[in-house]
Length: 183
Image (cartoon, rainbow, N blue to C red):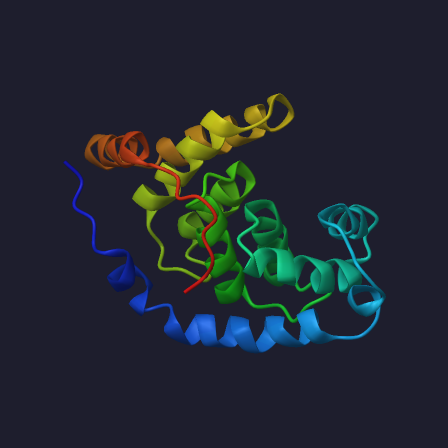
């Protein structure tokens, strides 16, 4: 049986990153320009992201992410990870990925798994990397599944049998949390 720390204990170490995330995301949400031009829909945010207008995408995704939209959280995390339209900050990206991944968003689970594998923005942990990659591959669309599975299997090849078994147990025990917002 998996031992879990209470959610508040898991997030306790994330307080500085969360404060930074608030400081960086608030100006995006309050900035003039596309977000202030009038009522917008989630589709506007996703369209801005798809056309590569990352400044507008960041401004439009931030309010959606703070409202608990897992897809917006994953995309905002990606913007922070690579510094597209927002200041680059892998720790903030990791917090957005964690929030979306815990809701069951496969792309966030995949990207979070990669961060844990390399130790970028989070402590290096191959067991957690594998857990998130197992979940990502299981929930991926047909188009993404081969990539997610290939990376999952590559990381598994570096793990001990005990590590792999623990990651699989953690993935099996995973239950998504609906509409989660950062704390």
